[in-house]
Length: 159
Picture (cartoon, rainbow, N blue to C red):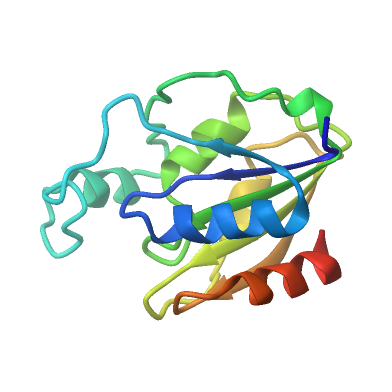
């Protein structure tokens, strides 16, 4: 088994595309963090104050349920964790994922997709969801689709 896992949450497919290219470039296993209830286009309407994503992101304690808890994180040293940036941080389902498994002694390297936002307080927000000896570090934030060569180069330098 590979020592690296690419785990990702993707609501619209953009992060999924990046995760698949990264996993192939790294020779890593791939795991999708899926919500128990899939997001609809209406759920993702950030301009609607009553949309599901807006309500989740404005409630710091929100923890959307996972579709499964089948990730075998124990078999990996490094987790490359991908997600879109929502409201300057990771979607709350990423916290659910981190709180559902034991990441003790592991390194979690973040990669994110965004239409323009930065990482903001993402690293600090996610550190609250893991044990103290888990290393979480900022990796790469991309604002446009990247090819396999980009992900292979990034993986070589960061994974």
